[in-house]
Length: 286
Image (cartoon, rainbow, N blue to C red):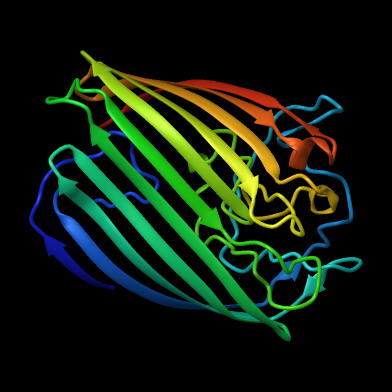
């Protein structure tokens, strides 16, 4: 990792999904990486649909606790599981930090190349987060906009594998329910955040679409939702989110989150429906 840091100052109360971890300044970074795996890839068009978002059978929401490493879940057509040796080269360019007082940015572009068995890998990721304070002080309203893109295509036909896989688990940035990952995805999400006393309120609505109609919708583990590759709809749905964080003491805080997933035609045509999610917990810092 090579980085250049310039002077500046500020922070991002949204907790931007790339988490620059700088506190101050502007960083420009270039990060190459290579992975070699020999995964077992399940057939995306076979078997029962997963339990999330919510199949129309009325089962409970998802529980996604295991995130595979990059390259472990590229779907391929055909019957049964496929085993392929994969070698992936990923290079990431990133700019993050403070552009001016009250404004923060975090932009990254990742290019994935390599081989999956006898097939070429040709995939892209784009992650952007920007926000600006609409006034002075910690209580000022902050407005943000997030745009994310993960390429798709190639999983269910011949030619290059274009469905980008994530190098680490980041599904919570797209759904508190962990129902999405940035694979064959276009996401655009405006948000607002405001602090009143010890309480911070954050609201966001995320529009989500498939990047390629010839590829599936992917869940948090980079695995496809069975049947979604057969539909014509591009709209995956909207994710409406509200978070309330309250500081009870310098070392104790209460966090509550609510989310409504309004399923679009890319999900409903394959038998999936909308879902709701509510959670709250206490944080203790020692």
